[in-house]
Image 1: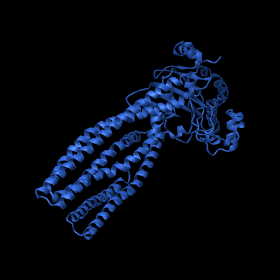
Image 2 (image 1 turned 90 degrees about the horizontal axis):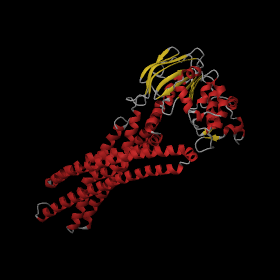
Image 3 (image 1 turned 135 degrees about the vertical axis):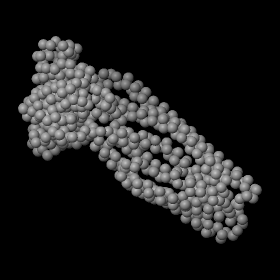
Image 4 (image 1 turned 60 degrees about the vertical axis):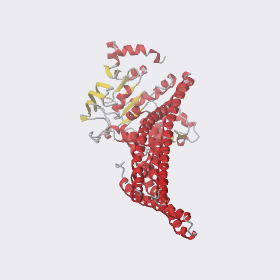
Length: 572
């Protein structure tokens, strides 16, 4: 936690306030005991007024200090969690889709939303609880030792035993909480995947069958949660039992001391009143420990993302000529790429393209098509190999100049909760209305826009008007039409979720976009290969064949076999 700005100042203030609070606790116990002893000794009512007044002031001051500690801590916690959320979102942007592929969409979303809220609770509680546990019991113990060293020695001896027992239960609770948090991540991923795939599941008639899978994951999470709560309740009961038993033993010792006349009533009452406050910090810490485990796990997960390495040397490619021309070249030599440092997804990729070629990327599911597109877009950095762009060797394609020159169109283009015009002008927000309307026309959106009450001002995206898959792809194409400076087009299975009729209709709109552009088109629909100048055939992360369609047909190898296997995907 010391890496967070401002934490030391908060700890110093918390330390000073905790010292003051411990002193007020001792004064509270002393003056309450004085008032009770005066009553026991049948002294006048007037003799208890001053002790009770001091007791009330100490009692009130003690709780005002708690308020002050929370008041001082909250701004730090609020600023820290805001900063963490911004850093987390910025880091996700820098890391690209690779982190989502590794962690799961639901987990990343949960981490960035609920996870940060849990971190706020954790930070709000942990600093004060740790300092209270580190200071208050020992000041009380020193004061008791000055009154009666035997009881102080017993309290000192019992404390490590309670802590040892709580460590054993705490480790068990930590293991349970870790499994619960992992189950929570799994449940989040299942939930998001189910929502995204629900239309497909319904079309295939598998929605009811998949409901059983969702129920199984939810039930597993419920069991993990109940197991964690069982440990938490057991440890709370055990702690309460041991502390109450210890206080009872102290009371017995003090009773025998009073009977033997080895201790007076006033010091005995002070010790007995302070004994619960001696154990209160560890009880509060233990109770809140279980409440903050999820926050601790969330903080660990968020910091793990923030500490991941991001690409450097993003300006290695000169930015003087961001527009791709007919004379520009891109070369990949012996490039290896992986999502994990110890795993390689793409192996020994060699590729050379020049000018406005149309490059098709085909292969079975899991062959590495999306990984290659993510590498070309700069979302993944090579583990080994050499990349040359326009004669300049670069360590990766996460270059500012390169990213200003391409449009990335995935399977499901993201539509922001904004107007249709804002979504089309994503790359060029300053474009004129006439330019946006012309781009929409070239993308085949004019007829659809004419049916909308507000035209280009219609709100689309999350929580607004629904947009079909074909319309979403046309909006992505309109983005490409609008920004003529982006002459590189990266398509990652853009028609995978469309029926063949919609795909053929969309194809008529897409083909004109390919003119005067360098196109990388990853798909498993082989009819697109007839429009390509060059084809890469991927299999298990390797480029097993590459060449023109005619050359691959003549080789009668993997490409021909793929065409035979995927014949059902070809349109009539």
